[in-house]
Length: 362
Image 1 (cartoon, rainbow, N blue to C red):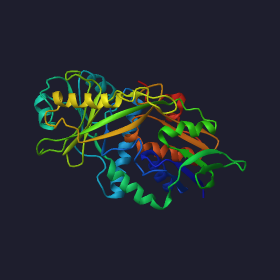
Image 2: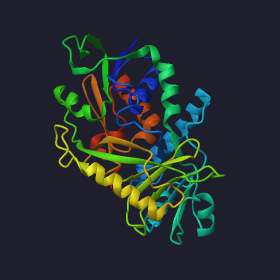
Image 3: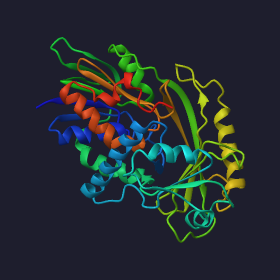
Image 4: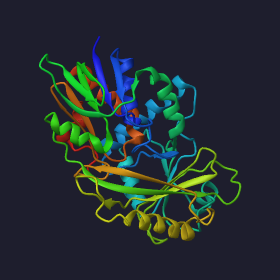
């Protein structure tokens, strides 16, 4: 039986471990903190099909199928049925890209229907689009399901180094252990590049930090809320994204803008996170009057961006070690887990995810 180590128990690491088990591998997952508490943190994430790169849209479509399979396997809703709403002139570009994938149901939304679907939004008469099979990913439900399945495979320890071993396998050194495997998969977020570099893989991750702010919904909403993206600029910001909680009583709002970090992880301007949160509140006052603009919670997380775009993603592999890098990956987790398992078991990275393919190019 092939022995595989997965370093990192965020959504990608757990997805890889799940896929590896299904492929018949003997798996251990290393995580120094609580699973899902790093870059995967938060109560909800956006599932959307619209991307600049049609290849990524197709990959995400496959991931949506796998999310449904998980729902069937685990017996729990993992993506809400309310869809994903996007507004602004960029809607035309999104529709143009997705027109090449007719199996993804998208449509323009008239202003009257927009108000009915997203009653917390201020009056808006511009272009709006519904991605009918998008929605809010139930992150807590996903982690509960995956950790329940993988509970006995979790090693609560920090990984200091991974390397190729003299016997042709790979070695993992933690705070208290030395373990050997046939293959190691790195899914350690901001820690991935450093661990990979010591094993001969150079991943060009650009590190930054990001803030999302949670707001209370002011009144009872009698429809499930969709996720939301605003590129219109009408309300003072572009690149806004938001997702509801499972009960539609809270809405998490973030700006796509990030604050720069140095390679050692120190922030260039530590006050920038506060500024992003303040701007999110100001945006809510203008654009989302159905929300109380007083923050009810925060998520601060690292961003690991690749040079070819905000949605760039790739898998690097050498010998008996593989690593994944990229940003905005939560929605892709089931498909990336499947691809990482294939890489570990066969030694071959799927063509679309090789770095030279630059999947997710803006």
